[in-house]
Length: 87
Image (cartoon, rainbow, N blue to C red; front, side, top):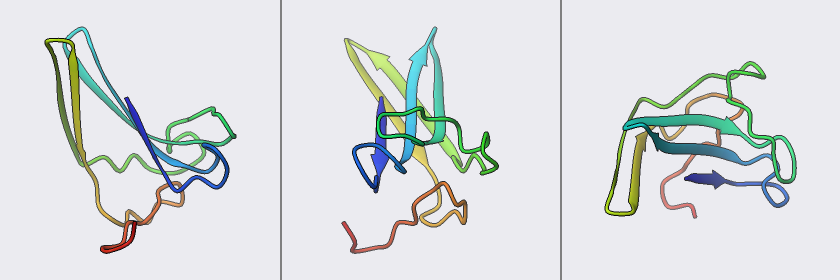
């Protein structure tokens, strides 16, 4: 699963979170889309930081649920700052 925030065009410049379940293990990545349709390197590759504070998830009965926690403003140039009341 993936969710992207505030791209400039299509997926370019989006702050993205990827998550999945593999062999019963939960994987969550803090990434950034460098092109219109990718690639999506981890924030750490170009010099940013992994700002996921906590995560959990499960795969059950054909459904996947991923949860993550991060600060609204991480200070990382590859993360978008979320502001209350803004869509």
